[in-house]
Amino acid sequence: MRTKIRKIKEDAAFVGQEVVVKGWVRTVRTQKTFTFIEVNDGSTLSNLQVIADTLPPHVTTGASLAVTGKVVKSPGGKQNVEIHASEIEVVGRCDAETFPLQKKRHSLEFLRSIAHLRPRTNTIGAVTRVRNTLAYATHRFFQDLGFLYLHTPVITLSDCEGAGQLFQVTTLDKANPPRTEQGEVDHSRDFFGKEAYLTVSGQLNAEIYASALSDVYTFGPTFRAENSNTSRHLAEFWMIEPEMAFADIHDDMELAEKFLKAIFKEVLEKNTEDMELFDKFVCKGAIERLQNIVENPFERITYTEAIDILQKSGKTFEFPITWGCDMQSEHERYLCEQHFKKPIIVRDYPEAIKSFYMRLNDDGKTVAAMDVLVPGVGEIIGGSQREDRLDVLEAKMAANDLDKKDYWWYLELRKYGSVPHAGFGAGFERLVQFVTGMENIRDVIAFPRYPGHADF
Ligand code: 4AD
Ligand code: MG
Image 1 (cartoon, rainbow, N blue to C red):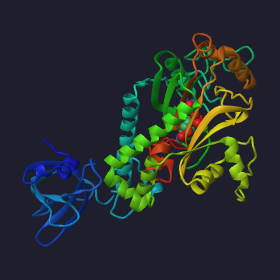
Image 2: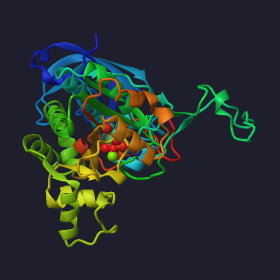
Image 3: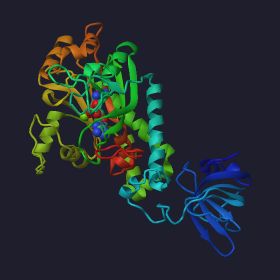
Image 4: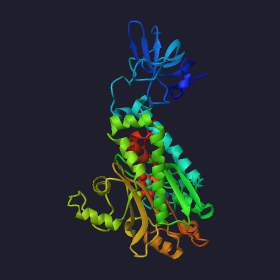
């Protein structure tokens, strides 16, 4: 039976035992009497050194091997154990002439163009393991608190964020769609009988279930057709969305802070080697930064206070800021990177710049919205207390040009046993980006989708 490299390295009981290791060759070094083969199977960052008396044919970088041999304590300082091979089987040869992953360091841009091979690099392997830890920790965190995991639909008729960044889902004949008498495309004859889209958020559906089961969360893919070629936006990204009944904006902020700390802590505990790689080669000081975040309270300020700080900063921003504008990433970054030097939670944003479902505050001009901003990434979480009063919600929808008929079920939740409730959306890739310090969001998801790119 095969043993994973991580197990062999972690458990001293393997020393002296015969094992079978399967993986891919990273490097081969032939010396006078021995050959050293570095094998990696993805279970851990560091390779396992295999020592062979002779170099069997076709053992080259990239080839896949099954190695049988004895685990021995390594005399070299770098690794604690190595394998003295008794048998090496080449499972799959690798065409050494054309294999794109040679020993030199490749740019992340280049690696994106070979997304089918990039998980075999140290960096992408480490990102993948950290991402896995974050996903597992997310489920554990919410499960431990008694939240129910809800699967919200991918296909939807409504635009939760009202921002119009929807991908349409249709089966109509592009070349010759059915038309109404007015000459418009007739979606009543489309697959769902209406215009349908890929979801931008599972929130509205989560609110339904929170209004019955109290605490729920979704964790699934979401889609936004925003044409922004930035290092923080994807057209397809994963979002974690908890929703709590009988909860207000303060409960929401509390949950968000607790959540981030819990999952970051888990990465520090489980991905030591991976984090050392990021700390060394990707983002100096990444480990200490994360430890600080886990151990210290986030700063909490209102939008109005944030604007005040920005205006008094004496800094010239590309976009000058006044009360009422949406903060640009330069503002968000100034606040958490230069002013507070830690994660901050900004709440009570002007009603006009936020979504229709957010609860209107007593001042009549701000809403109970909150964004968590972190150094390096900016907005990592966006959430709010939801408007639970039917009349206020109807007025807000009218002001946003939303048709009551399209949201009848959403409104009925306010009619039948409405409760104060709140939730947030955490962009999963932004979490991975933040933890690893990876500069571009396209490198923290296996197969990034962004304008012009949906390969692999
Ligand atoms: O702030 P957003 O738009 O909030 C919502 O969608 C709410 N309905 C969530 C809720 O309350 N249940 O998005 C939430 C988070 C952002 O803070 C950001 O981290 C991430 O989703 N996000 C993106 N991540 C990658 N690419 C994009 N294009 C993203 N747009 C938003
Ligand atoms: Mg937002």
